[in-house]
Length: 386
Image 1: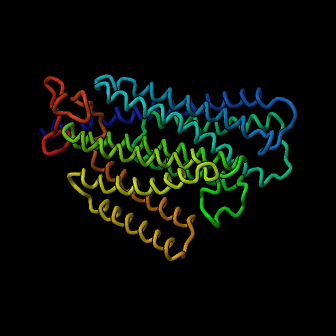
Image 2: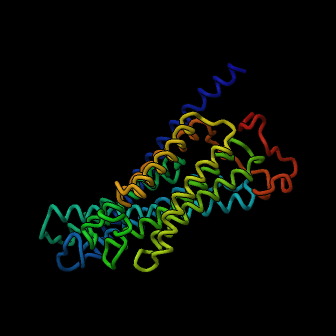
Image 3: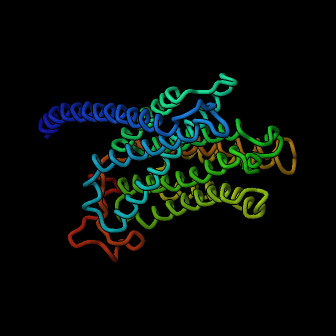
């Protein structure tokens, strides 16, 4: 048996190398196609007089729109090309979850590309004060991010994992927040809280609110991917418990999106409920996840405890001690949440098989009632492949 396994491993290694080379070649081709599309679209959309790099009437908005469309198209094409048959053996509910995740990620990649271009344009404008770009220069600035976005999105469509989503969320929030800071109506927003960035009708407000809404969507998708990983690990028998974890992530994401959908001046009470509800729902989900896991890795347990202690201490320092303001509290809470999420996704990456696992049940909440005929729903000893 050992010799057979060794031979199979040696036979599979060249195939894996060939697949990786094929993917890289296709990704590079997607990047060049994105460059060409961005260049042509930039020449068409920016034809005419020279424009400033950022601000009203600038080249930033058309360039961001083109980069967003190119990145979304690259991700969609790559997903269809590399994962088309993955959902075929799945029951309807599992196929629906997978398709919803794909649509949400397509939107997220478009948003990341657009915000990246807008933030880059604001930084470039600070270094080139008074510079107006000719159409050819604007087309080049459109083509370069379109190429980069196409390459990254195409790679992601084939190889995206849960830990990649956590990184994507962090990068997206960072870019969106920096853009909001650079274009904020109130330069002293930091004296109160981050929500001040979402006040007003200027570009900083819609950048911040839009970032928070899409970030909430990404948290929901991360929850779906965590549920997928837990199912690969624990099998169909654990689906009701896994569903509870997914619902916790979905509630956290929905509440986070509510922070952007209900800015402070328009709906202060709803905004505050969403903000503090996000912290509570995320903390509850972290605890629930430890209950669901049959094996509790020490790093994840300690990080979860640190999350609770850190957020609790920050709340005390904010109220009643008054040693930090709300902005500092939010930085601590978000920072600790990312540390916990990174620990979670890397732990799952080490424990969970990489192969897709079609569910053997027609319903995720009552698998014992809907198991397909002849299904082997629950793996022995709670592990896939045993």
